[in-house]
Amino acid sequence: MDKKSDTLIAVPVNNNGDFFQKQYYELKQLDWADLLIVDDSDDSDAYDLVEDHTGAVFIKHELPLGYGASCITAHEYARDLGYETIILIDPENPDAREDIKTVLENLRYGYDIVSCSRILENYDVKKIKPDYLNITSEISLSIKSATDMDMTDPLTGILGARMTSLLNLELTDYTHGILLQLWIQSAYFKLTTLEIPALSGESFGRELELYEDPLGMFLAIIETERYLYPRETMN
Image (cartoon, rainbow, N blue to C red):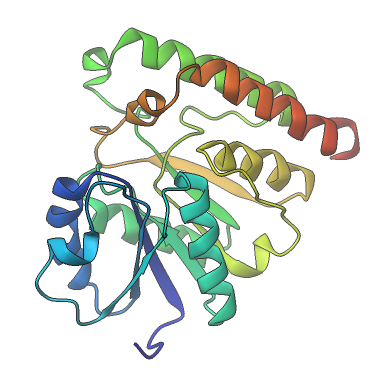
């Protein structure tokens, strides 16, 4: 598919085809952006789940590598084709079109990275499992200690960035830990970031279910990153 826009919408798919099908046809209506599907599934094929493949690029990993690997694939694709902006969408979170619009508006305003928090101004927060909230709170506190950034949802999969702002970043983790690398390195390189409310918080915490010890794993990633990108050199 020929590049027709400077904005790329990337959708990492990982065994969540039912959610992906619902989002796909809505995203295809955004004719002012290009659409990339990165399929990391082991039990389904995103390409086979939809009938209309026009206007979208599908990339399938030969083996399941992880969410972070899908983000890396999307970033490399956007970089190699010369996109100015990349927006990642969580296929399990509804109302993606409105979130995309808000993210893009703030990127055009001048921010380097904009993320959508699934619990900020979420009036259904009481419906979220307490364990999810506690783990995310611990991760947010660790991020603040490492960067002085106040974040409510550091693992959100709804975010966008200017491609030029990512040039110096080394994002290598194959898990959702790639997002923690993003926040610590963005602070180190003095990028401007903004966290705004997502229209829906429906998918909050589902990423934690993918890992045996999510808190331990993510805190270890933060410790490694803060060693490589120490806070005392950020100012």
